Amino acid sequence: MKTKSRLYRKEAYYGYLFILPPVLGFLLFALFPLGYSIYGSFTDWDGLGQMSFIGLDNFKEMVEDELFHKAMYNTFYMMLGIPIGLFLAMLIALGLNRRIAGTTAFRVVYYIPVISSLAAVCILWQLAYNGDFGLLNQALELVGINGPNWLNNVSTVKPAIILLLIWKGLGYTMLLYLAGLQSVPRDYYEAADIDGANAFRKFWSITWPMVKPVTFFIVVTGIIGGSQLFPEVAIMTSTGGPEYSSATVVFYVWQKAFGNLQMGYASAMTVVLGLFIFIVTLAQFKLDRSSEIHD
Image (cartoon, rainbow, N blue to C red):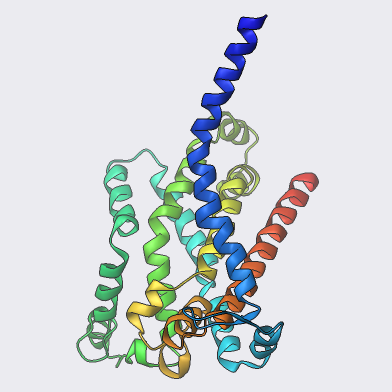
């Protein structure tokens, strides 16, 4: 009994040693910066000098800040690419799930943009969107359309970035859907064939419910990632686009923090953004749980 107790303590000791690095990493690189940022949101701080506590002044300024409102609107607008990407990825996954020659090669082709350098991809698309010699406008000229300068036009800069986001993430979403489709038991479809169900009925009654967890994961992670959109905007429209029409919340945070040295105000915006992500994610979990109960 004594030996067993000593062995148990030894195993517990080594177990704590194994989990110590990730716990320390979480405390140092997640929890401490989070608490520091929350405290900083209530201060007037330039990132170098002493913090001056000002209460809710940063949040009051945010309510009246038109650029912050515009950045929030742009961030929500860019998320329109999420449902479009879901739809296209599902169509591609359905096609690649068939037993036909060449599907493996197509999977590789669709996944290449996902693993490509984001900076390189943004620069390539920036060149393609160029109003004078861009590939997109050259293609439009072949059908008699005079294309705009996509990234310097208020009405086209956001759709242009959305198109890039869809293209970049299509392979990842497609691969997740493909994995979900391949996990659906074939017996369900065979039973549906016996009952005389058509292709649409099989998709709506079998395929879609079975891949719903995949859709839930993609939507949640897509909203979280879309809320933190920054590199694409910073590289393709370095000033936030014409009339600040492509600036996102994170881009505005970066400008305030490192351009204007308003770390306190930038921290307040990150707190608001974090609360938004938390509320939306929580709502998604609630909706998913309620839909499971009804199903």
